[in-house]
Image 1 (cartoon, rainbow, N blue to C red):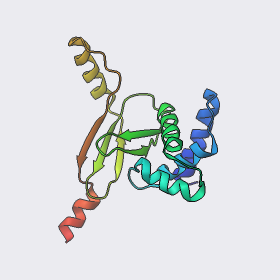
Image 2 (cartoon, rainbow, N blue to C red):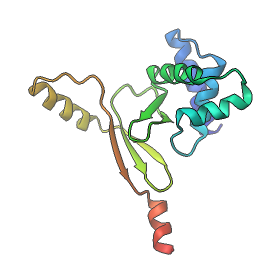
Image 3 (cartoon, helix red, strand yellow):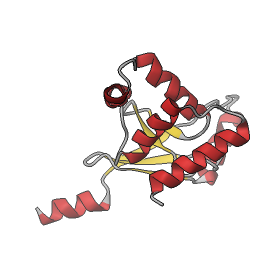
Image 4 (cartoon, one colour):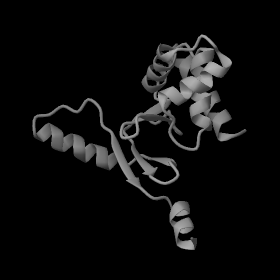
Length: 150
């Protein structure tokens, strides 16, 4: 079973347990995102989906993305305005994203102590955190090694 296949099966189970409708369009959007090597933008998703579903329009994609984010199946990469599949949607805590600026590869981290420290500091300053996005932009080992060889 591939990673994308396992992710889709897990998403289906998770939606079923929550009573959330995992429609064919939502499934297909998640499948496209999970199959990408990096983040995909909404209009890239729309272009791909329109090949299969002529009636697909921007609201179709944005509704699917909103659902997938709400279910914890997809993350929005704020700095790129793109979307990436969550490799562990059962993890209910905050996350951090490592983004390679060369190849677009995205890795997800779960450093709960970082999130806890930020939330505690925000509370101490009288601020309630509603959403936390931590993105680290840099270079992955593969790109660094390729640059050294070039």
